[in-house]
Length: 396
Image (cartoon, rainbow, N blue to C red):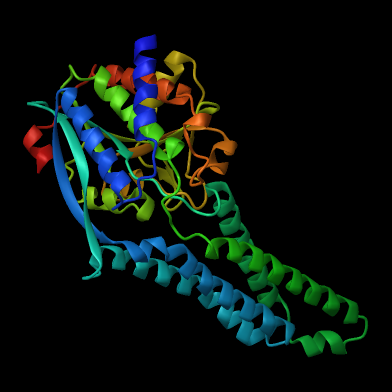
């Protein structure tokens, strides 16, 4: 990449890295700047409007965490009281409560008839082009009191504490039987101590999740100013081609609402590449695996990107998303699209995501630069076997 290209990327990053939660003035400024830049590059930009209610997603995690915390602590109390049957019922219904609350809040985000705000996804496409591939990046940012790494650790800890308590409740008999048998008193005291330790751990992990309301204090340089700038860099390089389009989603940080809205009107494409979190240090991570049902989301697209990484001698690991992390390729893949997410970084990258410290002082743009090179190389390889899609199908 030339020095002029690199300066272009860093200049765009400085412009876009500002607090921009959906529905705020910062979000409007960034939307206007992105539209202006894509039009300057020669693309036609179309707004795809949608609406959402803010509060169900802004407070979703604390609300779900409160259910988990209440149910798990009550179950621990009943275990200590020797009420094994009652504790088992409560623990076994906890996942259903959490799943039901999560599903209900997600539905309220799009179906609640009041308190909604309007926003847009931006679709940029070459005039008269026949796109085969779509590059995606979300344009909103959010802040939370703890980082993504701390949030993921708290979720994992919560799952472990629930599973441990459930295993104990299923394995143990009535406490009086334990205490009444000769030589078992010490063992009974041991599991009581363990239950109290688990309860304390539950309070710490659940307390962290209770704090995770959504604010607008993070500049979002890494998440996801880096993806936006890489998208612009690819658009700048590919402006003479007619087989690629670009989608800038909003409300990714509010439950992937923008991508869920887009999934309903996109035509079948050969590949969708979502760019999200491109840090300076580390390796590339291609999120192309699903946990259940197990398998790959887009094998041919992942192979294409992996081949491009091999040409540059860059390390690329194909994996699933970290626990508690969401990305825009998920609703697109559920809609049947061959969609993946590309990331670049280390474990330390997640320690500043969603914090006010996610700013340009810690991001020089080297990962962005490599992502532009990687995706443009993959596109060059793909053009050896073109299968165009009519533009009217892309526009719906």
